[in-house]
Image (tube, rainbow, N blue to C red; front, side):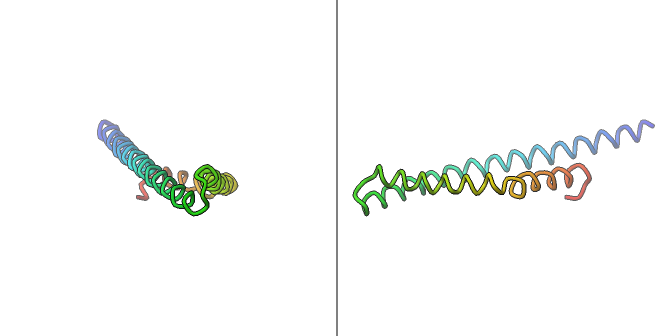
Length: 97
């Protein structure tokens, strides 16, 4: 009985460590992606502002592009995010890494 309890503890620690490391790595990737996206958006605003002569108009155009991207992400929320996380956690907890 003690061996089974120890095995259960080891599996729980293994699952938690894999889960936490994946979540943390995903957070780092998302944060780096956001920084890169912000840099590209700022650069695009500067370039587009020079082309059309108004940085404010360029900022609104880029904001509109982001708004459309947000609407698409919200429309496909389940297939983009929910299903991916469900598969990730099933793989972690049932050992299908």
